[in-house]
Length: 427
Image 1 (cartoon, rainbow, N blue to C red):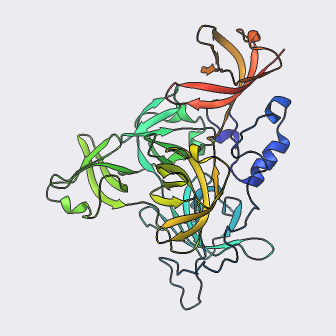
Image 2 (image 1 turned 90 degrees about the horizontal axis):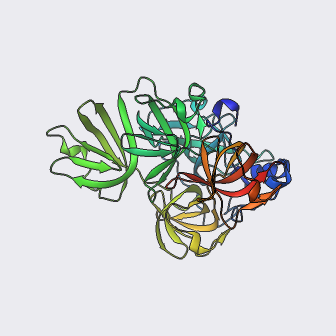
Image 3 (image 1 turned 30 degrees about the vertical axis):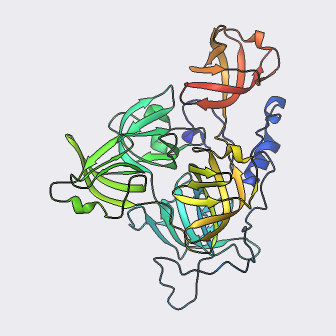
C-alpha cells in the first residue's frame, strides 16, 4: 500500500493471497514479526495459485454469460468469482489476471463502466472462463462492480476507527484503500462529505468492513446495501441498519412483492433534509450461475450447523471441504474464502479458508501506562495485553512512558482497544 493510501496510523496488513502471504513472510523484518503465528491462514497456506478447485471436473458445465450476447461464438462461463480487486490493471483478483478487452463492465445499477475505473479494494463479481495458456490469464466476460454504500458522512469515530453514513456503520481496517483525495484516511472523512464504500457486509456485527473508500462527488442519490430489517408495505416504509426510509405517497409498488425481512437488498435513495425517500429497492444477494466453479470471499451471515453457513446471502455446504480451521470457528461475522461449485443457488465447497481480520502493526513511544487495567497508549491507541501476549526484547515490566515499542494485534471495535498478540520492547 502506498503512503497516499495508508490509514492515519502506521499499520501493516496481512496479504490475502497465498503468493502474497509467502512474500510477506519471507520479507518480514525482525525476529519478533517473523515469529508471528496466525494459525488459520498462515504463511505458505492454500493451494496452487490460479488453479480452479474443479479443473477438469466432469460436472462443471459451461454456462451462458448473463447480459452477454455470445453472437454464436460459443463463449461460455466456467468460473464465478466474488472478491476484492487486488490490481486494477491488468485486472487481478485473488492472484488471477483477467483479460477485460471484451468484458461487459457494469456498476451496481447496471450502468456501464470502463476498465480504467477498476481500482484495488473494489468489490467485484466476475463471470469468466478459466485461466488459459502459459500466462494463466482468464477471460472476463462480465464484471459487476457494486459498492456497499454511497452516502454523505454523518459522524466519524477515531477511537473505534469507524464512521457512519445513512445509518450504516463502516469500519476501517489496516487493509482499507483510500482515494488519493482521502490520503489522510479516516480524519479526511468530514461530516457531509459524499463517499463510496466497497467492502464486506458483516450482518452479524451490524457493519460494513471497508476495503476501499472513495469520493462520490456530485452524487444526488444515496445507495445502501444491507439486510432488510423492517418492512411495512402498506406505508411503503423500510429499515436497513440505522436507516429508515419510505417511498413517496402512492409509490409503494416500488417495494417488490417477493422481498422479505432478512433479505439482502440494495436501496437507492433521495437524501433530503427532512428525511430519506426511497427511489428503488431490489434483492441483492449474490446470484450464482449454476454448476460453475466458484470462488467467493465474505463474512458468515448465518451458521446452520457444523460446516453449513451462509455468505452474502448464499448457502454454503462445506461438509466435504478441506479446511484451515475447526467448525467451531465458523460463526457469524467470521471472514472466509470458499472454493467449490454452484448447484441450484448454493455452493458445494471443496476448499474452505478462515481468514482472520488483518492484524495491525503500531510503532512508537508509549505516552501513558495504566498498570491496573494492564493497558498502555501508543499513538493515541489503547493497547491491552493478555496471558497469551508474547513479549520480545524485554519483559512487560519495561512498558513505561517514553519507551519505544512495536505492537502487533487486532482491533477490538466494541472495547476500542488493540489486543496485542506480540509486543517488541526496544532496549
